[in-house]
Length: 306
Ligand SMILES: [Zn+2]
Image (cartoon, rainbow, N blue to C red):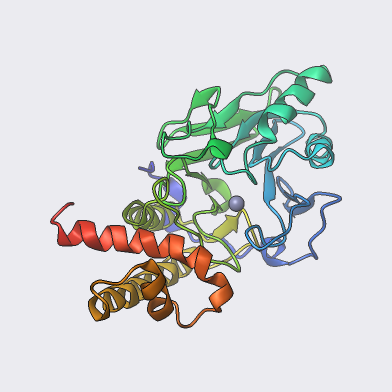
């Protein structure tokens, strides 16, 4: 659910600062807009691309919201605090995977220790299906559609992020919308340079595709043009990216369906060879997780479940 925005019919001007691609650097925050900073954590890898993007939204007058503080890395946490000039008001986790949420409590503690206030850690609690390394209890659970607003004390300056629940990659995944600038902070639901893994049981393909539709609806209603993922570069043409992603998922599902029909008694190991014949076999162990998510979805459809 998203609330209507009077600016919805006004397409946002292209914001070249968002798309300029400075080389990845973990040592300091990059200003994508004057009030939107990106600080990439020093955890590059197969699953994390150049590293987890922590974003900061705010300004000196309002203080800052940190989105996805990242892994528990002391230097990264210190740099987040520095980038915000020591004034962090909110810490929001898009979901509780190990490359996104573990820095939340240490960052909160650092803020308190340095004499600032103690910013709340916000998000959704991990579901019982999450594995132990993703266990997470926020200070407060965020409601779908909830606005998170930072106000300046002395002026009318404000920044409002709107929460949208997006289960699928993780049961406790959410995205954040910054309507004033036409931005969607997509966490791991939409990535740049890689495909989101849907890992049952905490991951769910039907929920994932439903949340993609919800995000498309939000982009249409709010005139959002840019996607800021937790891994990779900013993407423009947000609705086009979402449409392409959904088509890609459904094309994969058609291959999974064909593989299951060709080998009705087969196992995931048999089907992955057929359904993922276009990706290197080194990726198959990972692909099998998303394959299972497709299989579960196809079986639930065949069984008449909603
Ligand atoms: Zn991630």
